[in-house]
Length: 385
Image 1 (tube, rainbow, N blue to C red):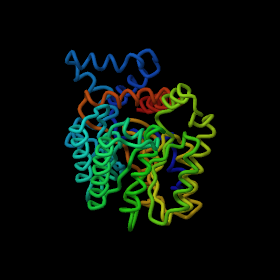
Image 2 (image 1 turned 90 degrees about the horizontal axis):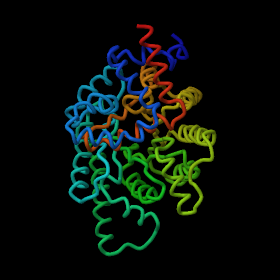
Image 3 (image 1 turned 90 degrees about the vertical axis):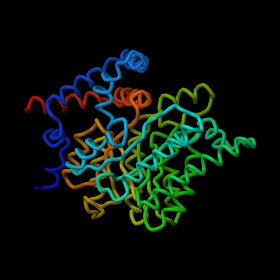
């Protein structure tokens, strides 16, 4: 069968063969609810209230079940095995957010290392991942990024952040596990970039182990990416995403009176994203990439460019990635055509993962047509059954 016939994102039989009709109906109800903006606005408060009144089971069996693997790594096993049965890898993502104390930072660092241990030698788990704000204070990262002098106490605090950051990267290097450092808000990203660049230089010796994340919805990130590839001699890894903080970025820029760092329109973002794919693939001898997108056109753009360069579908230097519970039509049709694919699989205590789940729901409404596309494909598959 010709590849173009195999790779068809409208093929719902391949996209949803791992889901029962009951699962699809449940997902349909959930994505339908995302169309009610008032519900999304009230959602976080309602979720906290539900937890307070002991309705954890309702949240766990609905939105948590759709987008998360479980409350622990052990609970994720079912989802990991299910994805692996369809030739899709897992990216274990400890998604606890919002806590800022030394005890939590140490616990998070320890948990990230556990995901690395589980991934080591396990062909079902493709990457580990962490957010720098999971192991260090947001405001401290903002101050470091601004270039302002730190107090003595802040210097000691930041030394601990750097120690945790390197301990995670070293752990990944010794375990031979690819590691993503997630991108965050623009005003803390310089600190994250600096830490990640140091770890790339130190640990990307024979191949790409540490990956930085590039948010192409920012106007300056394509130039940053190109400059890194041009000036650095060691192996490099990049996860290419569009971004997740658009409204927050625009609001802060307006409030503080500086130029909005976000692209002027979707077309500009799409152009930079596809150009980033091209530039990385043109330097594939030293650059590994993960095309992290729910955008069908960009996924197909990467496929086309790989074909033009004579790269095998299964080239391990090129991965595609989507979030668990979303864009199965992209993930499973790509894996069916033998491309490398991995799903982000968030996990953590239900109460602590609510902020993450809120963002996922809001993302479905902010990305033009995302929820609608999911619904149309689900309806198509249910009708065919």
